[in-house]
Image 1 (cartoon, rainbow, N blue to C red):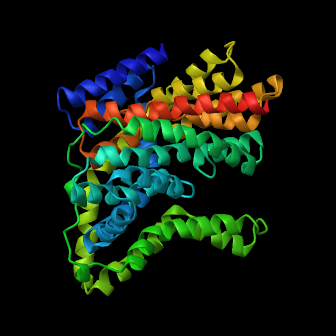
Image 2: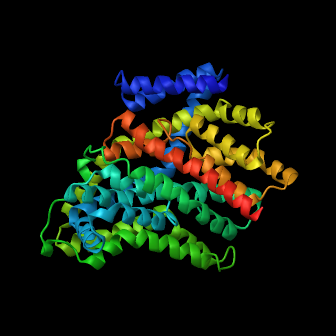
Length: 438
C-alpha cells in the first residue's frame, strides 16, 4: 500500500507541474501533504517532515550551489570559459568534444560532490554549446553520466562511503573495483546513449552565456584553468594527504576542513574574484553585482530542491523505504541483485540516492555474513541501484532541467534514461566482476 500511494503521489506531481502548470514548489508541498495524509501520518508529523526535509536538503547543498553559481558566473563573464573552450577546441576539435567532457567529468567527479562538479562544468558546456553551435545536451550528458557514476559508486562520496563504513570493508579495494565497473557504465550511459541526443537542440540557460571577448580581454590560460580546477586540487590534496596522518591530529583536522566542499569552493571564489575580477580590471562593486546576479540565476532552484526534500522526508517518515525493504527481504534473488533491486526501488520512490543506499545497506549487512557475498561488490551493487531512474523527486533532475532548459518530458527522456542506464550498467558490471573474482 505505501508503494502504491507513493506512485499515485508521483503521478499527481507530474500532472500538476506538466498539465496544470502549478509552480513546482507549490506542487511539491501539495503532494507532500496529500501523500503524508494517505500514509496515515498525523498533520503535526507531516509538518515536521516537511520542515526537516526542506532544511536538511537545502542545508547540505545551498552553500555549494550558491558558491558554485558565483564561481560559474565569474568563469563565464570574465572570459575564462571562452578561453578554456577555445583551448579545448584547438586541441581536440568539435568532433570529439563530448569525449573530452566525459573524461573531464570523471576526473572532476572523483574528488568532488555531484553538485560541485555540476556547477563547475555546466557553464563550460553551455559556453561551448553556444559558441560552436552544438546541442548542449549532446555534449553535456556524457559529462553528467561520469559525475553520476562517481557519485553513486565510488567513495569518498556520501552514500558509498557510508556503506563502506557500515560493511567495514577496505575503501581502497572498493575504489579499485568501482573504477573497473564505472568505466563501462560511463561508456554505455554517456558515450553510447549520449550519441543519440543530437535532436535535443533546446538552448540552455542564457544566464550562463558568456559575452564574446577579444584575445586581450580574456584572462590567461593559467588563470582560467587554475580558477576552475582549484576546488578539485584543494579537495584531492586534502583527502589524499589526510589519509596518511594520525586520526585526530591538528594537521589532519585542518586538511579535512580545507577539503570540505563548502570551504574549498569558498576559497576558490575568493581566488577567482582576484584572478578573474580584480586582475581583469573590474571594480569591487562591479564584481559584487555580478555575484549577486549569479544568486538570482539559481534562486528558483533552492525552492525546487526544498520541495523535493520535503516530499522525500515525508516518504521516508511515512515508512515507504522501510516497507519496500521489508517486502524484498525474503526474496530468493542473488544477494547482489537483491541489494541492487532494493536500492533501486527505494531510490525511485523516495528520490534520494543517499537514503536509498544507507537504508538498503542496513538490511543487506546481515545477509552478507549468511551468504558469504563479496562485500566490496555489494557496496557497488547498492550504489548502482541507488542511481536508478532519477525523476521529479530528485534535486538532480531539476538541476539538469533548469540549466539545460528542457521540457519535463524531454528531461525524462534524457536525464532519467541516462540515470537508469548508469544503474543497470553498474549491476551488469558488478555481476561480471563477481563471476571473475567470486
